[in-house]
Amino acid sequence: MGRRQPEVPYCGFFDLVGIKDLARHDTRAYYETLKSFQNTIWDKSIRLKPEKGEGIWFFSDCMFFQCANLKNIVDFIREVRKDCFTGGYYFKGSIMPGTITPVRAFQNPMMDQSAKAQKLRKKVLWGFYFGESAVDLFSGHEKLKGIGITVLGESGAKHKPRREPDHQEILASGFVPNAGHSLISDYYDIKYSDSEIRSIDLDVLLKRFLKAKATSKKLGRYYLTILMTWIRSIDIDDIDQQHVNTSNLLSLILGSEYESLFGDVAGYEFILLTLLGKVYEVEFPDTHLKQMVREAFHKRKKLHNLVEKTPGIIMKRNVKSRILDDLGREAITAVSIRSEIRIKISSHANKGLTKIEILEALRKDRTPSPDGKRWTKAKLERYCRKNHISLDD
Image (cartoon, rainbow, N blue to C red; front, side, top):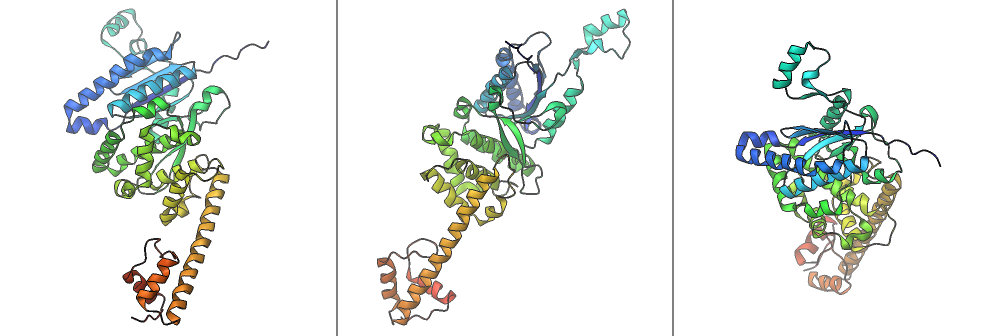
């Protein structure tokens, strides 16, 4: 038997989102949030099961950590994230292969190391110096303009998916890099577990989003990433068994409030596009959910040109092809229906039928109106004026 390969050490950094605004406007809530976050770190720290030289270093609302076992890191992050979801506060951060090589502040090798000075510093100086990996971690954290954990490759490079079981818990998601443009960048995050999804209070999440958006559209866009990662974490094949939280999220995205809630935040379109890509990933027969998502997409013409602009790791090429093929078929069908409506009304008018008689004939034949709803006299008159069809009273 071959020797087992040593595990690759991982390190990470994350901090709370929106905490500075909380400190300015509600000091009591700021203190309670910090206390809750720090208590969570204390409580969940045993999930890392650290060996010598591994562990957690945290101060205020931010934290560095390192551990040689990726599974333990995933478990730790999920437990912390679950508590944050439950408490209605959120964080962003980064993880990558490597070590942060912490050194106690009083042991700085570049400075005076005389015994007397060291003895004094050991009593008054608290903190740590970290290696270059800490810079790469912080850089990755800063580039992520969303609430999530960006999984990086070595030295902060882009993560490359691998087949090992631990890496199956990593998925592609997206964030809006520029608050002035409706485009997204892709990144890799840690998939939400079922228990995490159950812990999300959607009402609280929306309240936090609206409050953040009112403060700054730049901060508001951070919350779009939570929704995209949530959608990407759903098991579509088992959608009927999903928690009520997911059902409420889907109802929100497909409902009439979608635009009014998110429409003034750059990149909001990609929430629905992420869901669209998810339901098209598997070529199964049409389901009720797929039909609803497709209908919502077809109605929002602004989204049609954004399919090709969706990053390939979020919506693969074959998925885009299926979506655009469906859109083409729908367009052909729509043209055919419009032509059929015009021919029928023109034929009835040429026969000398009155408006009321034409209405009765259209309803009897179940001919759809242009908006798919019931024909009315006013709607018939508008249609005929637009298409230059003369009607008798």
